[in-house]
Length: 456
Image (cartoon, rainbow, N blue to C red):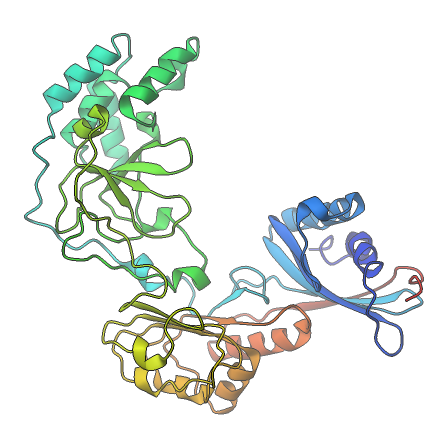
């Protein structure tokens, strides 16, 4: 990665940031740290919103981004010391195949290659008693569609069979009926936009063509480990939709125009119907919302009545996910429950907490704790079912020194208060990675000269 590790690549950005830093060390030097990714950047002074950055800074960041793209890298972190004379030592950290994003400040250490968080491994529960809704009526659906879209171009049986072969499943009768009337290809109405508007108004979504249908399984809905590990699959007994990340029975056929996907659900919840229509919110990692009992109802504009949404419980609610902090649960005892899977300890205004109440819980797999909130980090060693752990540097140090890091972990994070000491965090990250024999984060040291700093 010659460009990414070249001083010429970084010099404009270092210059732009060094000139804006008033704090100096005793010898007058400027210290800075940051991260640059394809989607944004961060400096030691915090997040820099794009709209408030200077044109020179934008241009300097783009220079580093071009090097990221050339190297096939998503993000990289760095630290630098600039002497008053301009002599500069730059340290570029990463990337590493064992780190999910940046190697520090939010990057997740991937301890087991290819491991997925538990919600992403979940398959639907069987629903052998599930049946289509009474409103599901392919013949009535076809009459309504042809009445509203008399000039629509439909798909033939060969096209439908090709879609089924590609997906590896049989399309439900209502979905076949829909595509036999209107195949959803843009070229069918590109000369008459009103025809496209009529399809949207009739079907209730931007209809995908047959070759764009896809199965919304868990792999189609990726999420960073640090967020995915804090989700839980919860499906109450009265839920119409299973609270899954994705399902091999969710066939996506359209978009609501805002990025949310509509799917036919062939794996409904305990109170649902086979072939019901669900909406997957693009801002959520998990769950879907019931919007119609059948495709026929969707086209008729009939909403379900008194049905439950198949989504995971909200933050701070139990029993699967518990948030202990100043605004939610006020004790570990309140969070302890046999069904607890995720425990997140946040900003706390009381004394450090004791983890003893959750020590024997059978399903606890995720623990995140804000720095300074744990009375004895070594207690984590007793949580032998953890697959994800995110704690502060001091807590990791105590756990490592006690040789108490749970070997069940598949991924780990280090919570910091900023980007001040990358070298220490990289050392700590590499020590954790070494326990699993994973590739270390590589540091490249580059020397250069920015020219004299302005007076402090």
